[in-house]
Image (cartoon, rainbow, N blue to C red):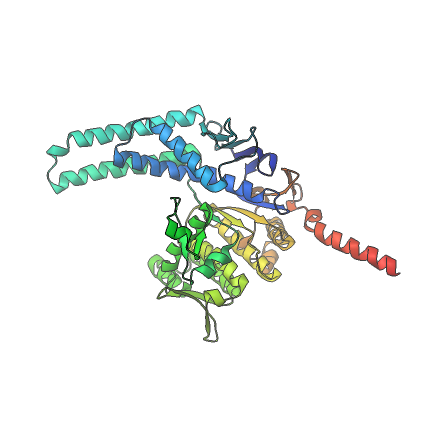
Length: 452
């Protein structure tokens, strides 16, 4: 069963009800609700990991008194961090169905704010089954703690704890119907790329600010998803300190098989990254640089706006492929500040990633070049599974082909979604791709007729 998102009267959304497929593309004008929908999917899919961390916290701190209310509070607080306190409608309801038995809903409270979440009965039953096992283990081990004295006996305790939490992690994957990590790459990436080399105070927490912080001219307030993004790139910088070439060499040495499928995928990814970035990334002595083939380099905040905007899309995807990660990756406007050819290349990289380890992708876009690039890869899959496989492979690498059964494309307008994916053809509808061009051409033709 596909997972499903249902939104009723929230922000710019009046009503939507969509399946969450492996590859989802949203187009729409500004303020049509693309980010609202993307953030909702991120929010609900990330709750599995939040619940795991919550179990760990309950266990370590012996917090077993009314534990489900504690998780209700955590879910509500996270929603507020992402969207704010008000919902603008007393009828707001957002529901995510993970499978036939597991769902979570968020509704407006009586005063127009955010209410506490509602869990399906099956989720509540599973919640208490796991929390009861944790409480029993915690009680048993603490009752016998005085009798444990040897390092061997202490090691036995730790082994029991590790085994239980590993089992809980697998259970949560089954309960929520997904083992993937969720990563969100927000729009405005060039802001953080630029600021990484500046001396600014970035407010990374949710605590009240002191008077001195409030008076700081350099204080920059960031929303929840941007802070998550900063955490992500801070970790990735350290991995990339010697450059991508060294990472690949280390990977090949570790695998000891340069001809395996993953090695080929990594080489393709590296080629696409180099084409788009026009150089290679390095991070040394706290300085991010792009180094070029002619031996020159530039500090990242003096690079082009396109390079600044795209660099952490490229490096995030590359590192995820390198680590064989299983991910649901959300990218807002991957085309930002990129030349049309580079937009085509970034869809090649995204498709390569989607096909590797069956990763999932959600994109928001304003670009017809993004949609057309997807259609090329969908069409290649269609022809490549016929008699012309070799000829198609000479034009489009099979690693990039997209199975149309994995993709959905929607336009958001008038508060709802409309599919723009032609299931019979297996392509995104060309009329939607060309709509803006048609309007521009019609205007030109009307002007031309006046002159004629």
